[in-house]
Length: 308
Image (tube, rainbow, N blue to C red; front, side, top):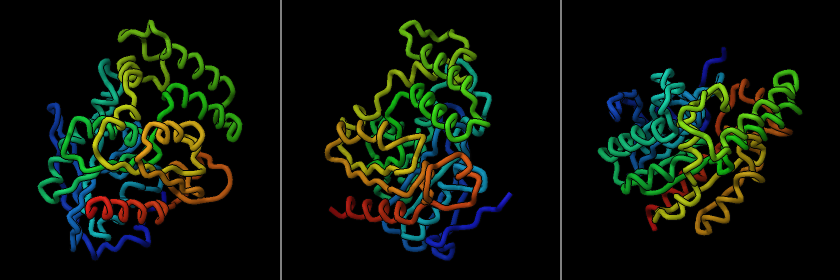
């Protein structure tokens, strides 16, 4: 496998890194604090997407959260990223009672508290499901200074799963035959049912996740939660993203958050890697880096927000 190399916008001479541990709900997860040589007083907690991701959001040869951490630290931002509890303890994902909230919120709040030992202003940058859950974290932790939501999904996940599988059945039929799409449609209907109960077998549900996970998601509205916050919000969306899309997810953010700053990076896919043509899972197998325009947009927006 190709080894990760740092992006051109990251200068390792401008920062150092320290290992840390975050304790929450009786479980510890490891993390990394990236400390700029010349800090600007701004800190960021990074939140990876759905699934058992490590602190770098490693995907094949790529590490998009490490791109962000090193790029932002080179610009003076202090960054904390951490392994999700589902990465540290994968068995949790199939246990009854597992939820999106449990996978993110306790350790994210611990990360905010840790980072405030270094800086005054702590923002959350959440990618994909990390962006979806970021408003929930800010609602529970009032010291959060603002949110950067990168490809945060608003469409119900069970419906998005059907849409994505249908797309892949068209672009990659050898990997996703039509019977997979039909199975996801049946499972999505189970999630939608008012009769869904905590003891529903996970085999009847999308991705084999327990009913507790889907009940938690059904009860959570990220846009309504974000609308109640009194913090600035930046929303970034890739124009070539087929997982979280301009057509299916961005309209809810636009309609529900009229004061948010929204930017579409037309060339970017779900991981904010720039390219051309329809995006496919094969994109993620090629070594790439987060679009420098995304990083510059984030860094400048945070500086304006804290200086205003």
